[in-house]
Length: 521
Image 1 (cartoon, one colour):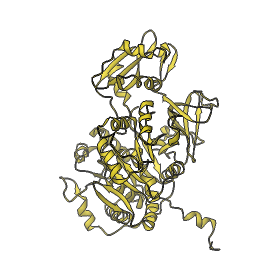
Image 2 (cartoon, rainbow, N blue to C red):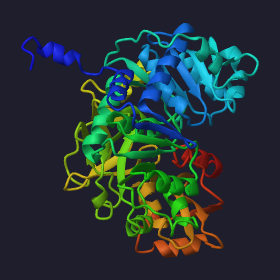
Image 3 (cartoon, helix red, strand yellow):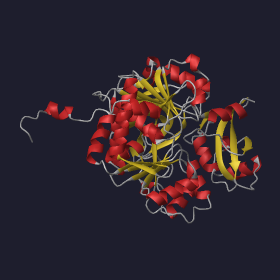
Image 4 (cartoon, rainbow, N blue to C red):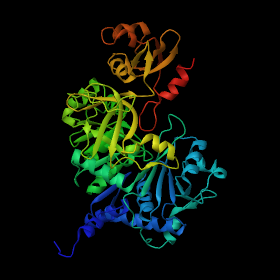
């Protein structure tokens, strides 16, 4: 070690921003494949070149430190380039949900104060519909042609200098504003810092041993932390190969696994079910997979057993936008024995359960609100100091709004969202517990439980189910099936059959929509 190197100097050499650590990775792994999309592959050297070029465009348009740069569009390599390019000049990347209405998109853009928006040709019209209400200055469309009022990004890249001066960046600087789903009201912008992202990368790496040999298949939308920070950034940090898909399609997923020898990916129960029910499933080659990270809800035992039979290694995790992704992770070999668990806290995360009075729960099996602490917890909500104080206490504990408990071995189980819990006859009823029972019914493909007002019981259990092809089911048959499996106060009192359950872009069931349709009657 150089005798002139001080502890301070060593600390200052730590990569402080997204763009800095990727630049260092590009220098070490320049010729390695970095991103593949629709058959075209960029190596790390090409990825870095494109990042520097786009950062120069952003700077020339007046973007700089803390300027907000938005993205609206389907998954594309340019999404990743824009995120790192914004970070390179100290700007903040704001991925927007293309499934929102123009009014909701305008709310997010106005809230974030977006200076520059990059929108693909499919979604530019959503911005045009709300131009008069947003503060945006620059409107960019990828390609060499642009609709009226927009600039073609290819022309700007051709005219811009090769790169822009890079900002230093600090761990506490906000790198991304990720808007929550807005299921309980107007979306809030979670401020994700450079340090949050680096910490979650290391947390994933320590739990699931990422390496430069990994090939990650990413389809989850990039406006969600599941798309950006589960598999994608950890794989890039290690110099691995990321294969991007615009949308989830079961056949495309299986083909990509075979073609690129994919090792890691992210699924939810709904997408796992679609794969297992596809006609190509029996003949598909999954031998390259070492890790399927599963989120959003526990996997039903029959589906998990089927994956186990096919050698598909399934893990489970628990986290949220505000924790930059997963805070607990389950080892793949424990998936069957710990069915329903989302694992133990990651190496860099702390988890505790608190009761209704905010006191820590220490007894195994006792339910309470799950709280998360660690370097992956967001800085706060953008422009919402009161909401931030309500979410994160003085000791750094993030209140999740989820009900859960630890078993005797320290494995976490999520019972439900606090807002989803219903009270029937004075007793707490957790929909997730009931849903796991209903999924075992031979006629049910998927089911969701909500509460509806009831004069006698306070709330009654309402089941909304999608059935398997050619299946039929009555409320009486479902209640008979549940006898001996559920306490009588948990038995369903209403059953509604639908073609499919409404889900958001990341596969979570939209219970707010179900309440509007079936519980407000």
